[in-house]
Length: 171
Image (cartoon, rainbow, N blue to C red):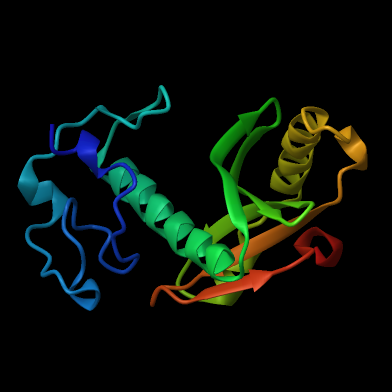
């Protein structure tokens, strides 16, 4: 169905309320708002979870679009995207990137401004990400001795990306 094929689509953050259409900035005219398209509630995300509201669908697709933009920033730097939305015992890590021998754990946050996005990283969330990262590093050949860092990638309402490297040191 149309809604399930949207997973991984690259919608503009600002126009993420439009389901299945790219925004005008991307060169595609947005059509109807999600509510007017009668998108079925309870859409499967492909990860065993269901989106049970239009607002949930909008947030999910906006998050996927932001993660795709951030992934492109890292790829343009010559990094390899190892995993997207990787789940460990502590929770989900948005992106796991390989920068040479280093593993970079990336938390992606979106908001109207970079400052507001940065404020949305809570101490509890940092702890969960660290726990999941420990799970991931346990599967690496060098285990916990693997060189690693934690970045936070901020995406504003205009789709601009700012990466804070070693962000958890500063928070």
